Amino acid sequence: MFGFSKPTPVDIMTPKQAEAGQRKGEICLVDVREAGEWAQMRVPGAIHAPLSTLESRLATLPSGRAIVFYCLSGQRSARAIGLCKSLGLPHQTHIAGGITAWKAAGLPVEK
Image 1: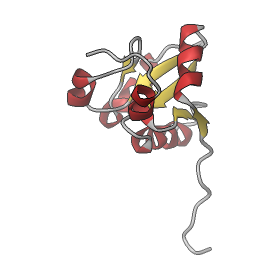
Image 2 (image 1 turned 135 degrees about the vertical axis):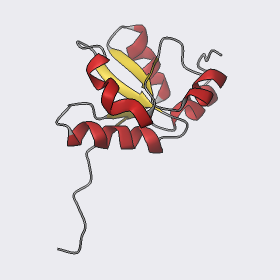
Image 3 (image 1 turned 180 degrees about the vertical axis):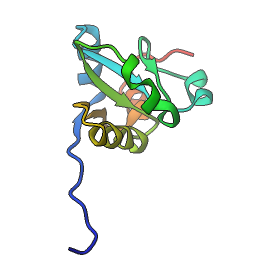
Image 4 (image 1 turned 120 degrees about the vertical axis):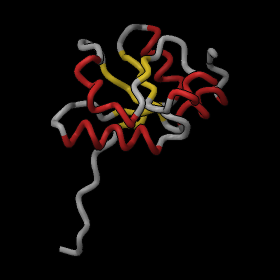
């Protein structure tokens, strides 16, 4: 009525939950940051699919595991979820606080 739309449902995972899920092979982490950020630091084993090209890369993401997005702090990964929802895809989970929270939790990163 006032131009407000229903917010996209988003599931939030802590860095430690995401790391455990990745280790067990239950989830696939997808980094939606741009190439320069990816080159500086990333989660080992994550797939790089920048938000700017994500729509064209969605079909290449692995199936059979939950997709969990992350970015620097959580804003772009939330936008990635919105994109997936608009395309009818079930991906609705991201890491709270992004790679910043991942690193702060003492979890491994690589360059």
